[in-house]
Image (cartoon, rainbow, N blue to C red; front, top):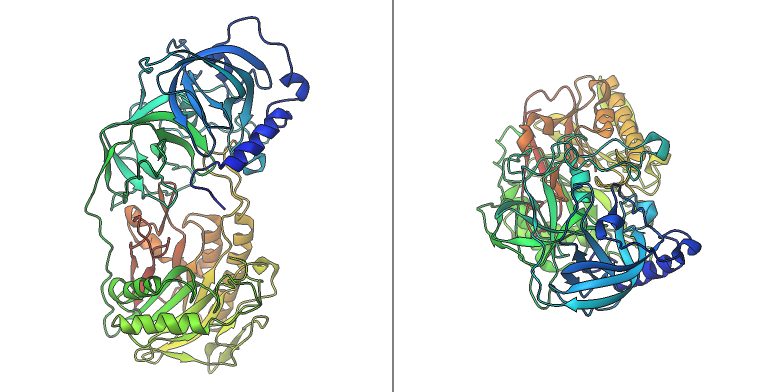
Length: 614
């Protein structure tokens, strides 16, 4: 479980042990090497690459001014040499890992002796960059109350436009061995400031709302890929958005609550402190002095209601909904369906859990979950939705163990009917047949190709036939494999390794193949594939879904500044999609922003709605 700080005390202890055994800091022999005869400065330790030239070496009497003290999580302090060299590639700051509550104070002039190491947040397998640090320290306080080295300003003028150098092919794409070019690449710029006292502008826009771990994201580049509502759009693998920076605070939460901010708010005043690197977001300003949030005017969106002759189809990931959740969650989600989504005719839900949630006892029915949710919708003034689904096999579809998440169709029987055709079970594949010149499913509801290895430990697509004003509409609800295991944008490998794409590509090909079967039976079939695709509209996954013109990602009909359903590490991006077959030529699409931009969320996803006339 993730602690309230990116590195827990337990992890810190493991790191200390690993450093002592040379696992992270060179060999044991190197760790016991002779102390250097020459005075060592912090910039000597940091060097001009990401890896210290003194890794695994003992250093003695390294001087600096304490700029920040962390008393929780990874305990230690940052110190900085006030007498900088003339090389922009060498940082003048370093973290001293004490493993216990430090006894120094900000403003102390100290001399530190200890072991130079490279700590990798999340472990080497994570692909994360390492933090240069001094561990097992002997600390001498020379004087107190000293002025701090002037904070380096991080702003739109100092951060380069290019994100990262290409990794060295001879080193598996790693950038560790490359000489830093801080005037050319943003990642090099931040690395060259690792451990140093930095500050951001007096009015930085929030692009990632305050999360449960007391952190938020700002951009120091107000013009960079701006979203219509104030965020920063992630529109391609090349638009990493160099101005994004994570903000935490040094003060314990019990002593100083972290501010609550939404996307589009401003962080005003002084935000200053050491620049750290952590597992959950990379480079992070750990604020010794934290600015004040100036609230913006952002409000949850409401989509327009469908016309009488329009079919409204929506997708909504309700984030592991189960009967043990507070009634408030059911009520808020229900209110969103009614008020923000205008009661769509068909709603594909993702992450509906079984009747006892994460209790791992073999239960797979979601009858209680759906009864509670549809009752809450009716109570909120919505229609009396009916539902159709196929219960999964126990613990075969991934997600939270014991939760048995699945996709579910809700539909308003006053507006649309569901065509029941020999409902399938978890292991039965639905197929396509031709009836009176039209396509039909062999099982409705039914699962698409559940035995395909692409769906191992993942949610199988749910297909169903609906009829609206005499016209058949095929709806395929999806929840593709997660991005778990992918390296972050700040990875030591550039470009980062996105290993999870392999599975989603196979899943997309399976769904695309099924849609092509429907179109082969009837080229004018109304087909909608929708759900939490867990991938971007420009990804290989999206391209595979659309292959051969079988489907069109409807979110591409929106202006680029409005294409997002999720905010991750300050990047507003597309994960949830609705795709249409060629017969659906005219439609209205809306990504309804009610969650992703806000600190208070009912889900971490924004729902999507498509309205059209079959």
